[in-house]
Length: 136
Ligand code: IDP
Ligand code: MG
Image (cartoon, rainbow, N blue to C red; front, side, top):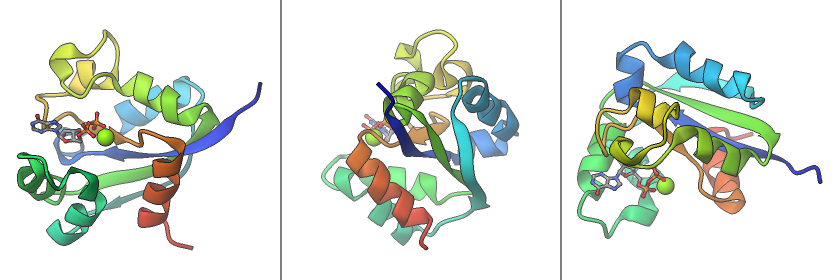
């Protein structure tokens, strides 16, 4: 059955810094996820704190917010069949050490915190995260 969805993807500072934007975008496109919108921005620590609010009780929350705001990122709306789950599959496990071969995090991730990409984890969160970055 057709289930065309949108999801939010972020290329994190570690990957932007290493000029991996085109490499990562090409993985999405080759795998039938269309990039509907994309922009390169830098966010403040306060904006990162709002975006990652679900993690506010975690010990790594402050470092995570500092990190996401530490340099330019690319935020994208990806669209396609089961886009939320499909993007998560292409990303691989949170810790690059545990990520499957040929996933973005296996190919490019440096560590659990510098893991190159973010992807929404549910259709509901995808809607919230898309509207966080793309207001219309
Ligand atoms: P996800 O990005 O695979 O959805 P989440 O559990 O939602 O993973 O965590 C959000 C981000 O927080 C991760 O991508 C990673 O950068 C960071 N993170 C998660 N767990 C840890 C940890 O144990 N130490 C440091 N950073 C972490
Ligand atoms: Mg997550």
